[in-house]
Amino acid sequence: SYELTQPPSVSVSPGQTASITCSGDKLGDKYVCWYQQRPGQSPVLVIYQDTKRPSGIPERFSGSNSGNTATLTISGTQTMDEADYYCQAWDSTGVFGTGTKVTVL
Amino acid sequence: EVQVVESGGDLVQPGGSLRLSCTASGFTFTNYWMSWVRQAPGKGLEWVAHINQDGSEKDYLYSVKGRFTISRDNTKNSLYLQMSSLRAEDTAVYYCARQFYDGTRWFDPWGQGTLVTVSS
Image (cartoon, rainbow over all chains, first blue to last red; front, side, top):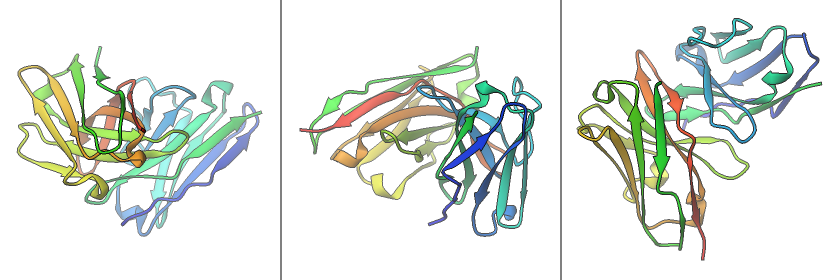
């Protein structure tokens, strides 16, 4: 079965840039989306089709996907961005990444 | 407002059955695939099942095939997940989500989730 691997944790200072990677075999041949899940809340879509932002998602969230790695970038990170982030792709069934906890300190 | 709301989660014994429901509002339900995704306590997200607009296409996570059945009632804007032969490893928060399909598939929005606990 297809697997997506993310680093368990990423730390970033307020105002700096956070990069979260998602790795999978030939992932660049698939579309990737990203979800933010704040503590105790449901997931929220922040990026779809590799680079697109849903309405209401701040411009500081951006995505890219090439080769075997997709990346979610949070520019000018704010304390409210502290959350778990999951990548997701489709490979006959839905596949989620292992998740990354972003800490803003 | 576009939203989905789940219900039906409960404590159930191993081997038991349970039916989850999800009611959609704020969008044309019949235009969308729908999915169930679960999250075990302290763990990551796991896609469980999806169904197409008229219910003629369904697919499942391998570990739930033959035990779970996804269905929908378009007259009630509702999605269901019938779960049987439940196991401890099925313990999770179950989320309902609208599914987009355009070259790939993604989920938006998600409901608040309903907790299923399988334990004796």
